[in-house]
Length: 261
Image (cartoon, rainbow, N blue to C red; front, side):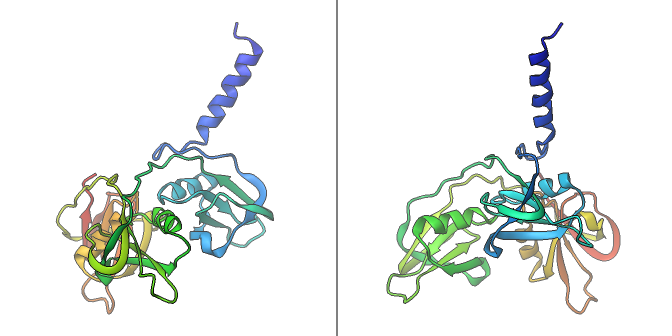
């Protein structure tokens, strides 16, 4: 007969496994009640709540997401918030599940001096420089960020730029830290014509179409993105949709590129 203590340990162990995201292998604390205060600067994304578990699974799709935060039950439509810090404080009615460390640390090269030329198309974001290290840490919060680039010291307010390519060339006074390779390059199928039907539950994001290639590159910035889907040419403003499933069915006028892995 198994001792009572061993039985209790087994129950606790299995309960812990239940809070694990199978897809990403990340573990979470249980939801902490009356905890949910965070800065707007740390809000990565939000959407209507589907379930407590789905909120954590959505957090797993964002490197840099450290907490799944859920708004109070008295809201007409409860929301799931993805937050880039584990410093979440008290907030009545809210609840928070913190992610335990699980993301692979890619690491960076040292900052290379006089390197900082990149295309505007590769600029993901920018903000005033806080520190060299903080610029790299901010890059870690963005899937697809390949380089942390810092403007020259003679600028009145130096800037940190997040860049989606590691092809950064010479630029006097600038400096760049490249992220070491750790993301698999899956590649895509060619765009399949008249394919584009997917569930709203699988829509990760959308924006106005820039180009077919840019739609795929944007998909690469989202772990869990499985398809780049483009709306028909008769739309006044064509859209690029990021989709979390490769099960995309027929839809006249649309086209879809599936990720190969």
